[in-house]
Image (cartoon, rainbow, N blue to C red; front, side, top):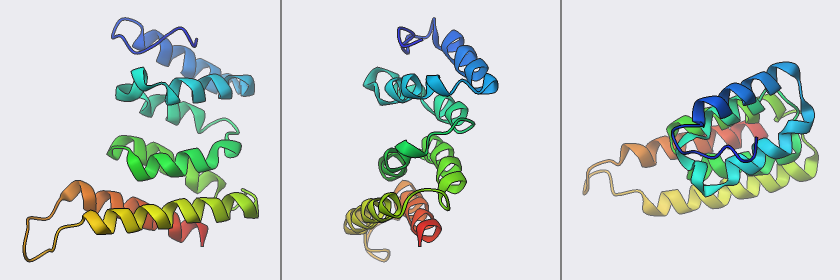
Length: 141
């Protein structure tokens, strides 16, 4: 499956395989899913992979998904939020602390990029990013 990169011809096959592995509970597929998600060539179509991964035990990658919430687009944030909600009570104290640090650092960065509400037009994407990061912080607090 790690040979199936995003090229338009194989994306549906890759997603069908990922869905099947997820439905079968193929835990050994988790590292392959993570490799595919991390591959920059797949960036335009990782939301389905994250969704299928959410049905498997992927809590050891929790902080990676926290990071994706901070730097990805809306659809990817939504899929990562599923994983954050699923494991927020189950991750170790160390992972919770590390995740909160990531979120706090990123909310500071996003806040510094936010325009003055009365001076410049509001950036909807920036506001959305702040909402997801804030929600993550609430989940972990």
